Amino acid sequence: AFEYLKTRSDIDHTQIGLLGVSQAGWIMPLAAIRSKDLAFLISISGAGVPAAETTLDQARNEMAMTGMPPETLDAIMTVLTLQYQFARTGQGWDEYVVARDKVAARLGPPPDTIPGTPDHPHWDVIRRSYFHDPIPILRRLQVPTLALWGELDNNILAEKNKAAWEAALKAGGNPDYTLRILAKANHAQWEAKVGSNAEMKSLDRFVPAYFTTIQDWLAKRIRRFNNTP
Image 1 (cartoon, rainbow, N blue to C red):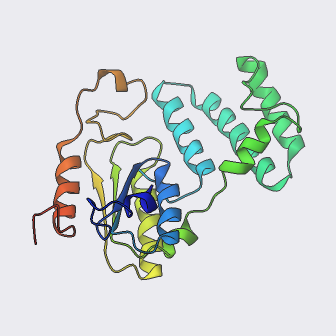
Image 2: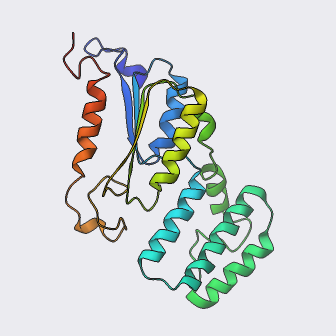
């Protein structure tokens, strides 16, 4: 898409950037280091840690927000942690099965996303997607970068992921980056009270700082955006 936009005479090809939400936080930096002449990158709720880790964060937070008993929550988290360990290393199958069977005895048969056999196709899904480490890519990111997180995001935890981005961008010597956590925002930057998935249907607007932060940041960097000749 970026290469196509550069071919159009009605677009200033020196002022094209990327903006994306959530999983784009893993994908856009990959695109940016392959396309050296991008003007900017704006990440909304993008992770600075692997997908397996964000999945564990969200699972724990969502279950806790439903009022699940701590012992049940801990048992499920043990299964998920062992699941990712087996997918990543091929080790610990027996421990995983024991933990899975204990949860199944308490709650019923697990879904297909928690496989009961080592040859289940879902293992390949996990191995392909869940262990990408974004840090080496973020260290190579040199374009002007704005990254925003929601204070109440229960998936991409704001402080953890902001710290990961900041450490990587600083280590890589990125000369122009702005990282901010927006108050009261959830994963989608909606104005929230607790940040749970169940709450989403009751929300009706973005946090105002979402738009103003992006506008102000772009206005200082993009010529056409601020009408500077």
